[in-house]
Image (cartoon, rainbow, N blue to C red; front, side):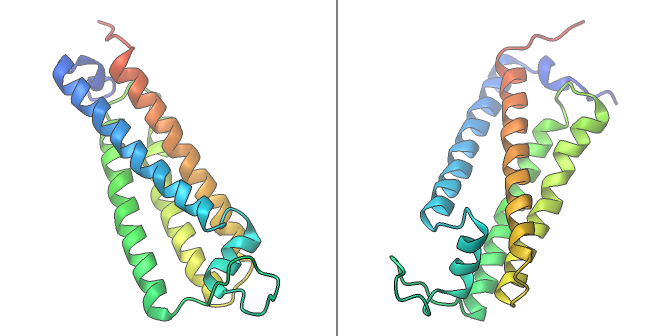
Length: 165
């Protein structure tokens, strides 16, 4: 079955439906990133402080306490599941885009490795493996860059690109 570029041949109603879905999915994803900014976990020190607490810092603007095991498992569980669904759905649309095969499958598969690296890394930071905060940052940034790239490709192909015969 030839599926590369199939997205371009779908009826206008289905293309519009998918475009609206991807836009709403993006609103949810970027709202999550705004929350990350609010928790100040955009730096290695912020990641560490968010999960290990800052009770020892008398000058802290916001007091943060070390997360308990139950809270950590809940954070990891909910994020791994929800992010997996986000990238499964986006990847399912990406399969039908018109792109070079290797590039397309990198964009589709890599986010799943980043999910494990990011949230596994957060768990290891909480367990005291401090250097994992850099893995969390790198994998989180990579995951976001791939999300943005995939969304732009999908929206461009759904809304602007015409099928070539």
